[in-house]
Image 1: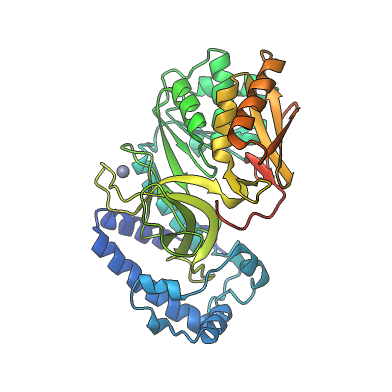
Image 2: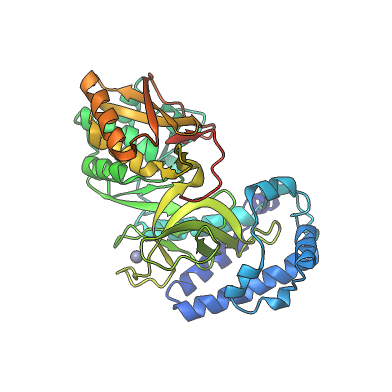
Length: 428
Ligand SMILES: [Zn+2]
């Protein structure tokens, strides 16, 4: 294999260029135009899936459906959902038989990365991250830090955002003079806490921050903005790539790229959410993945509906917020579910003397709160938390508090606000 062909396997350049040019050319499309595009692409995807993907051949036949029955985007609802569980059970029959390449995480090697890189280029333009300026990227990686992109990028590991490593890492980061920062919100939070408490700052100041991969909670946004004095953009995507959303400089709403996928926001009963501020589950149909089609995939992520256009003038569909995953919900004694989003805010309001915390649940109606204290934390803080918790939940949820030295991260270096051991299937 020549170097060029090896490079083509890793990154298919024509795919990158075509995707990029298409995204640029379609960015001002109005609703009718992109809906027309989506329907055409959907019909191609369905015909292909029926013909080449055994799982879909069987599914369509069982439901007496034919791809030609889908003549509008609304017709998509005739097709049953795909769930994480179904993917696990049907991993072989979900692969298209007409692709000779092996799959990597359900994706077509080379083309997938090229396409995502094109979206990444667009993301950098949206978020004003300029290629030649210095970037710090904090994600899950093995080495505590390393330089990349000819010294223009400093990659820092989210695993090292802890008491022990932060002092030296922050010195390195400050000396790097970054213009841009891209990170998980949990790492940003740890960094902001540390820099604020030690009166440290980036000089010249950061121009902007991009938060990815985890939910950015309102209290985290406030802390990060107060510390770094710059705009935070948010990106939303999943491993299965069934939705790609970005916030812009005019609002915190997620602009969902219609070229990427068709996104539905559905209530418990499976009907579309149409009321302002109402929440529903995000269901995505990828318009790019033909090798492993994700059609009406239940992401488990909860989104907040809005019909108000963004002042930036973009015509993409919007989500006002993303409230986290269904697994970020706790189960009360009466089987009611509550989002932990609000819970973190309530802890933050009850005390300013905690460094970080994490909820844990393995029993309905009982919630455990692990706290990493700051030196100022006293018994009064515990009482405040308990008192406020009681006010909110009465006897529906019982709170137990314990203290830990640190909160471990997940295998890929991400922070989880709640470790939920109970199966939470239903929506709040
Ligand atoms: Zn906008």
